[in-house]
Image (cartoon, rainbow, N blue to C red; front, side, top):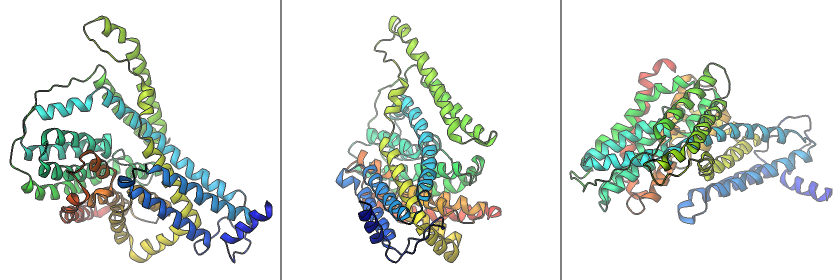
Amino acid sequence: MGRLFTVISLAFIPGLAAASSIDRLDLTTHTVGFLALAVFTLAYVFVMAEEFTQLRKSKPVILAAGIIWAMIAVVYVNQGMTTQAEEAVRHNLLEYTELMLFLLVAMTYINAMNERQVFAALRSWLIRKGFGFRQLFWLTGILAFFISPVADNLTTALLMCAVVLAVGGDNTRFVGIACVNIVVAANAGGAFSPFGDITTLMVWQRGVVDFGGFFALFVPSVVNFVVPAAIMHFAVPNEHPVTSDEDVPMKRGARRIICLFLLTILTAVSFHNFLHLPPVIGMLTGLAYLQFFGYFLKKTTYIEIQGTVGNVVPFDVFNKIARAEWDTLLFFYGVVLCVGGLGFIGYLTLASDVMYAQWGATTANIAVGLLSAIVDNIPVMFAVLTMNPDMSHGQWLLVTLTAGVGGSLLSIGSAAGVALMGQARGQYTFFSHLKWTPVIALGYAASIATHMWINAGSF
């Protein structure tokens, strides 16, 4: 068995000399490196084809992560380096765990607000007001822009799309262009807040940009949203949809849960800024707020049942945790481990040398945004953070902006776009979005120029 193990190891690393005294082996030109790249590429092909294969995106990347690190470990063990791969994996797991728990708390609050019908009440209010298509185009876009910094761009896009589908009906022209606008607005809004997107959360948790620093991207984000929206406005039908009188009330405790969510965000920011603790500790403390409030709601449910309110469903916080987007959370695990493995092999160092040493930081950071339109922005941003190039504060803000809004260029470039293709199937498609890509690209370029102008002192 030991001989077989050695043979397999040597097959992976032809010509590699023993290097037990070296902390990290350069495997970029050896078979193990090429195999790792092939495995990751194949896994990501399955991720991009999720809409057609119906295979959840977490499955291929989790498998790829295991294969990549197993191959790396075989090489290191064969060279007598029995702890290096383990230490590297533990480092990646710690980074993932912090972000996963942070996102889990945020998702739990969003699910709690959804169960208390906060979003359904907002949707019914918009429908009852009898706005025209052009008014709804701007309202859903503006709301998406300002809700996504708190509720994340995916949840926000789904909420606004539900409004568009409810009032747009069979008007494919309106639904399609309104969905494009929502995707652009949600991604732009998420770019200037640590809570708006997983990429901004990663940047904040890494300590590259502090909490207040993200708001320097507010004006560039507005430009990114408004420029394409102003052009698309003229293509929106100048008509009024049929209105509805449906009034959906929020359930008991809804407003208090919103306040607790805001308090949780304040706790996370305070723990990070003043106590120098990881933000996730503050978020988990905030989860306790919701758990105690859920206990209060459960214990006082009998008062409602005995009174005038009927059909009361007891609040259970653990149901909200169970309904978190586990596919997204596990996908994030696979991405972190895969990219971490490729970085440990040495590919990210090579990429950093080419992009940031040869191209220059500005060109490289703009390219990151364009790449995120094709490949999900999570692995792209994690790769940049792992490279950790020596950049000014303004350049870190630039890559945060481009990674956040670059995904708007294509419908498959962001979680919001992919989700809306499923929600508005047949009305919002890859090609209906692609039609407006030149206009979105104009907003992308304008937002970069705006950032480099108003934040010139940070470069």
